[in-house]
Image (cartoon, rainbow, N blue to C red; front, top):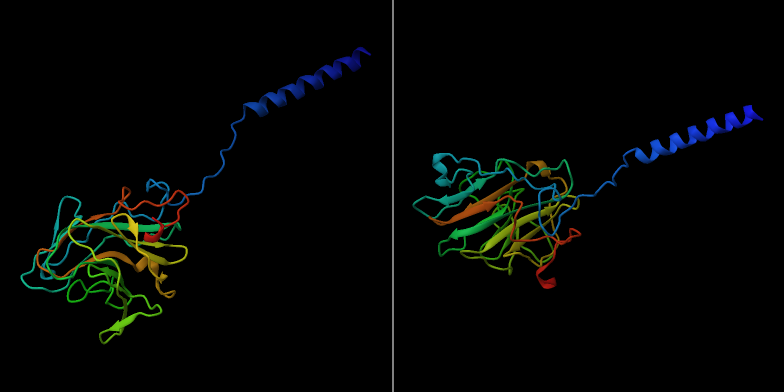
Length: 249
């Protein structure tokens, strides 16, 4: 009997030690899924390019970059002509999420010639605009959206580029945005924090998303914009990442 009691006591001590070690071990935290949030912060929106800025243009492009971060672009030519500025970084596709950036119109001429969108590296920075050049997409200050072949669209030029009319025009002090759901390749545009109500603006399935760059085109001398690559935008995503349309607001 004494031997049996001794062995039972040892078993109880071993069991107690195992329980104590289990309670003391750190517990793994549940993995959080990242996606666009209502605050628009960088941690929850992996598709943003927060350190982006405009690429310095060649002198013959007649487009100036202003500020230490080169976020302001101004048409400094003497005549009306398309002048474009392209960002240093393309869309980041390593982590699916929502890509987005905005611009504010600081100055604008009488003609409707300010465009925001996505361009390829091949698009010239003069004598064409984002959306008109093949493989690019853009939203113009006259309310036209370029580059998407959808039902009811019109076509322009030798390249028969598709465009859609009748969307919201933008003027000085307006904040205009361009974004894409990287999983669905569906683009959207915003104005003053509201998403345009449009048809499905899909990027060509054959297009390489990593060869699409934020791009702004200016037409009139002294047209001037400032870019915002995040994370604090005029437009806010819902907490579940849904992009609201103008009619929903």
